[in-house]
Amino acid sequence: MKKKKKSFSGLIKERNKKEKTMFLAGDIGGTKSRLALFSYDNEFKVIKEERFQSENFTSLNAVIRKFLADQKGKIEAACFGLPGPVREGKCQTTNLPWIIVADELADDLQAEIILINDLVANAYGIERLSKEELFVLNEGIPNQAGNSALISAGTGLGQAGLFWDGKRHVPFACEGGHTDFGPKDELEVELLRYLQRKYGHVSYERVVSGPGLHNIYQFLVDTMREPRLHSIETLFLKGDPGRVITEKAMNSEVRGCEMALDFFISLYGAEAGNLALKLFALNGIFLGGGMAPRILSKLKEGTFMRTFSDKGRFSSLMKTIPVKVIMNPRTALLGAEQYLILKKEGKV
Image 1 (cartoon, rainbow, N blue to C red):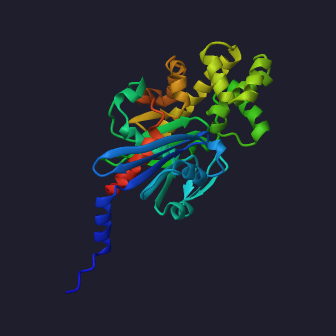
Image 2: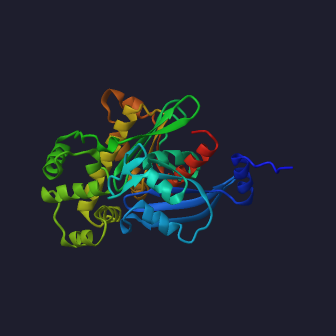
Image 3: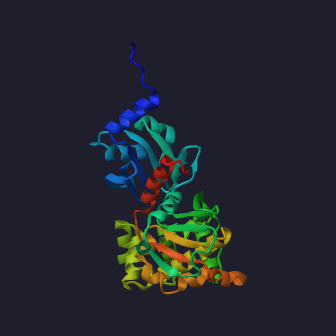
């Protein structure tokens, strides 16, 4: 009697009994990239996780090869949060000279590849956070029905929405950080004109980001509002200027750095408020990225919430919106993992 041939699905099930299926998740940033390998079979288990300096690699493929160099086993699917717009399985990263194509990665990994915006990944990661990993800047009215939003100043200025569908918040991408910078007073008008001479088009990312903080400092120095210090200029040449300014400001070492950071926080609050209005994010605004936790004590001083709420006839409404700082730097990586889990369960 002829032995019955197993179906393809039967072979897959048999294989899965013998070896655990692995998934690859990535949070790809203009400065740092995090990758994690994990298994999920009714239970989540991290196999390996590593962080890389993005500038040391010529492509995402190169980062993945480095990460998986000593790894054996089959990867079923991979999800990467990318710092730039994702269209039809392709992304040219905004602050990193990489072009990422899902089909090319799929050929290399022999796995399903999912590319999403990094802020979308960050948004998916929010549901994985504990209360202790969120610092409340403004209590507002908790648990209001409605949308949420995420804004993240770092190497760039990322933004995303979380649409309330009546049952859960569904993240979606946007590129709001590249909308026109709108000054509110004479000092900001001067900043706009200063940056127009330098860049032409001036987006909010030019002022609300690590490089944006450097732009603000240079404006204060070049317009002789603050003295030019050789010691600070030297430090700029050795490392990230935005980080240098932040450290000097937080330690109250250089008045010009403090002035720049205060200006930055005012602009950050205003743009976070703009995003809240545009998406009618009554359920809350989340501040992501690496900068917010580092300047938390400054954010608590009140300037951020003042400019966030200063929206004329809608100021009272703005004060009802909860505002929270994401303290976990792995949130976007958790979100890429979460997306893969939801996809495996058929929920996305």
